Image (tube, each protein chain N blue to C red):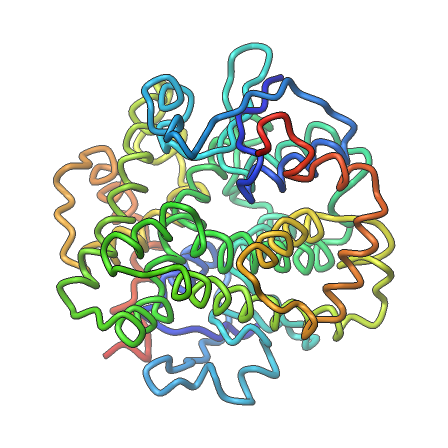
Length: 213
Length: 213
């Protein structure tokens, strides 16, 4: 397998965590977003949407969209599970993931911020405020959902990492980059500390990737 | 079951389609986004994220986030299936859904457009241009993916509606509202025509809901 991705992309980061949790280590293919390599013909032949990540299988099939790839991973490599067994519990974990995957990350994506700079003349202070606004709204919701779950252990759900942690941790990393004060979300901070002790999360970190810089 | 939703919300619309395809008809509870009913304490007690839709089960459990609710529906009401059986095929359908669910809809969401108006002084022409930009990027990708699938029938995947159609159709409706010229995506237009012939899609339409107006 080949993982086409970029060290600092949040969707790449989440997919790397999921792959490491499943014990998979695809070949790392860096797609440099800074030089717009993802907009070139070679990458668009892999993924017409021109976004990272893409997972290329050994038979040449290409999977795109991290939520779809992670569900595929869960179906084809069920151990260790990243979703609980019971449907209502699965819905709770997927909802936490979707708060990040739908309502935080895409709005602070590189292409959106470039559009704000270009179309609306946003400077760095306004970009950071824009990102902080959507991160805060999402983290407020996640903090409330975590605190409402009385059966929760060290992670977002239960006693082992799930899809929810896979989505949350890259967003915490990104929040720090946008200078968001994380002290207002102690439950999220505790989850981050628990995840940081796991090898899969450590190895997936942007700073640990070959294209980091 | 009670469906807390708003007629014109795209995520509400997609969940209504999925419910109708599964033959389910929960009680309709309108949450009026125009009067910010979703920001009130009563709705936030149901969903701390303060976004529609939410599905309240008969035992009082509340499911949030349409992607999580729709996967729950598929797991608890498997017939008719909205995902194919084979993992790679499921990943293709989920990827089409995620192009809309992650990379188009959230960026054109009501709260984002209000922020653009308020923080960046965007007028209606710039709002429509903003929406058209992300809709076009997403529809270009979907059109390419649909055209690359040589085994496809009348819908986004195979010969029956799937998650992909459930996500796509509300976005087509929304594109029309933002005055996007749809003629550049003939494959999407053909899928829309096929879906329009199905009762579930017809009944889920915004204009057919009790709070429409």
